[in-house]
Length: 338
Image (cartoon, rainbow, N blue to C red; front, side, top):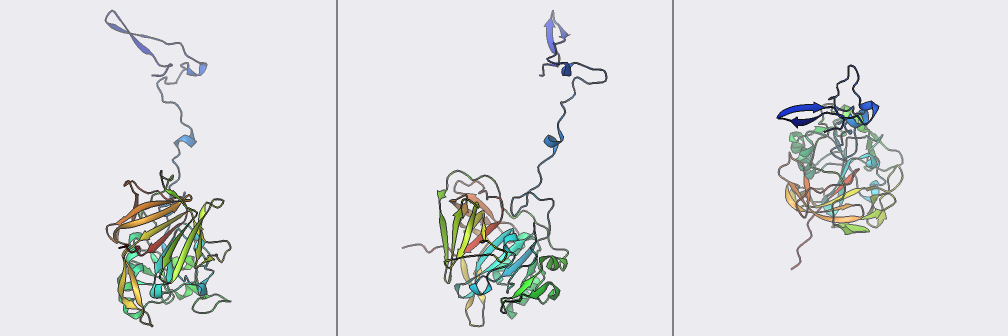
C-alpha cells in the first residue's frame, strides 16, 4: 500500500485510522482531489504498440489485400523486378528440375514486378492459406484451366487483366512481361487481406548451428544463401552467381526457411513431355530455418490447405523468424542413405 494512504491501527478492539506523514507536497490531499485515485499514466505508456504484419512481423498501419505473382527464375529472366518489396518469396520446383518463384505482396507494392510467367498446380495448393488472394500469371496448361477456375483466388492474369501488363523494353519475350501490382489489385477489389498464416516472429531461440552459408540443390538448379552480418540478411546466389535485383543490390532476406516437402509427379506436363512436379505442402515434415547467422533444425506442419503452416523447434516450441522478408525454399527431402 502506498505511503500516502492511511493504515489501520487496532486499539482496544476498535479500528482506528491514523494519518501517515506525506513524503512530498505532491502527495498531500488537496481540495477536490481523491487521495485514493490511481496514478496518472502517460500517453506513451497507455498507447499499445502498433500491430505487426502477419507475413513479416514488422509494424503496420493496417492489413492490405494479398497479391501473388508468378516470376521467372532462370538466367534468361534476370534481374527480376519487384522482389525486394515482397513479404514472402516461395521457390518451387518445376519441369526439368528448374525452379520458379511465387512472390507474395501485401505490406508494400513495387512499381513493377516481373518477368511474369505461367502458374503451376502446386500454386493452387499453397494459396488457400491466404484466403482468396489475387494471382498474377501468364498462362497455364490447357488441362489446368478448370483447376484455376475452381481455385480459391482472383484471376488477374495477362488474359484476365491485360491493362495491368506491359512489355519491358530491352528484354526478349517471354521474359519481358511485367505488371503493375496496383493495377492488378484494382482488378480484384475483394481479394483477401493479410491474415495469420502460421508465422511467428521474435528473438532467436537458444541453440542453432553457426553457418556462413547454406546450399539447397534441385535437379537443375542450386541456391546458396550466405549470411551478411553487415546487412543482417542471407544473400541469395543461384548456380554460383549472385542473384541481383533490377532495382540494385543482391536479393536476400533476414529469414530463409528450407521446407522439405514430398515432391511427386502430377498429371500435368510441358510441351516436351517433362512432368510437372506436385509439391505436398500439407502434412508434416522437416525444415531448416536460417536466421542471424545460424541454422535451426525445425518441423513444419499444415493440417489442411485452408490453414497456415507452423514451424516449431526441436523441443516443440514455436520457431520465431527474424522480422522482415521471408524466403520459403520448397525442396524435396534428401534421400535416406542405406
